[in-house]
Image 1 (cartoon, rainbow over the protein chains, first blue to last red):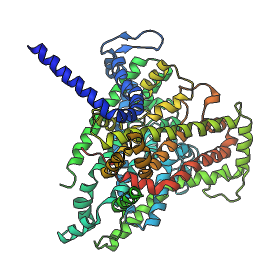
Image 2 (image 1 turned 180 degrees about the vertical axis):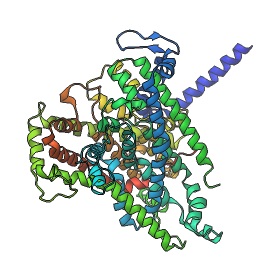
Image 3 (image 1 turned 45 degrees about the horizontal axis):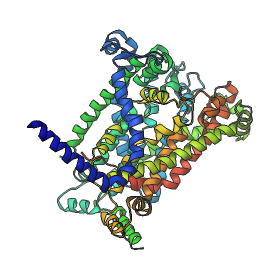
Image 4 (image 1 turned 45 degrees about the vertical axis):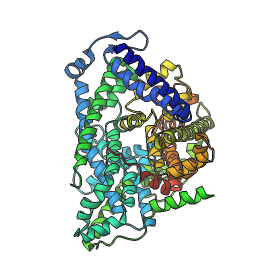
Length: 310
Length: 298
């Protein structure tokens, strides 16, 4: 009896598919190139990382099943991973939110300017993120000798006597990288926020004024933020994405590996095991942990954002 | 003709921000806004200005003590040194330039076409692939850096490591591109598409002739993001043939020399800064227009 049911359902499904294909094949053809590439370079890599994370794999021999060994090794046997984890979390809870707020506050303030001035100021603020590789200039600013800009300033004004080794002293390295990361953080989310502010329906403000909203703060909380919620979530996703993937800045400014791994991040650790030691299984396990952390952060942030404007 | 008028009207309604709101602005608030903007502006701009200054400093000023921010006697010798060094590279500099321009062009155009075709099908119609978009939204979290190793394994399996495809293919599958395009296309009135359908147009025609022209701001935005990302791209472990490397690699080769090259290195990075800034100046208003619809609705 059940079998017939399934058969019937199958045939209904199949004939439905036939009709659907006939009606929509052009739409499927249009979506096909992107979908294929997306599966090839996003979906498959994610699943492959999950599967390979349970193996030993060196790209030459077939992967060997190792169960959860890689994960145990990470948390029990790899002190450098713990350092990288702590540093990555620091970026996530310090530069992530700070950069996010910077994007938001500056977009809010820029919105008060006249349109011409607004586009000029936007260009200035967006320029660091726009220009890609120029952050190496911070090397000269934080240079460890007395020629360094910061050192010279501090010595001339009597704050310090000896130059500080900003880029080689493990006490300061991470802070320097965080400053540079903040400098680079006015990116896509910043532009999204500027657009968000501009698109709030002006009549809402007028209505709110009649309802008793008195100042900019109330206007922001009761009118602007709730209408901008979708942009806020988009900005958060972009910010999480960039603060969990800090690597190149650290590599350029303090070298790889940094002294005592003081500025090591998970992505750098992944690069170390993936591209230098060819331990792909372990590198994939690290990648999976990174994925999970990002997903957890994203769900926390969307829960917080749901409360905005209430 | 009719079609054009309808889109224009539609756009105007969506994007006009005419008229200031009526909230009274306190002087105190204005002072705070000005101070914060000025302070952050200095923080953002100084390093870039410093790079420009350095690129015009003669060698004795670069190593002057105490260091000075401003250039006293600007010279162009750093730029001439840069070009001399560039000409002495093992691989001719024109090859790097060609690589960068070729990869940028192919990827940018490809990304815009592929992403908008998929966006058209996902934004305007309910089909059996509607489950696909939420997947793209989740993947916005995972950028190329994070996906690096598994992507490398895929590239290796496909046997295209050390070819131009390494730059092009993964960038074509840009979640951000599809996301922005799809969100923006949502605003194209369905009536336009229906009208074209009644006139007998198929989906390919509607996509190319009607939808694409009316989402110009969105593809300019994709152009900016794609260009910017690819322009700054350096070839990691996936390219070991020097002849296939890109401009930033060539410049960093010049920089990795001795200390006398400090000025030339600044000159090189100033030159690399110019194209993305130009592209942004040209596309800024379209980008802001597009980002208006960039929100994630949950």
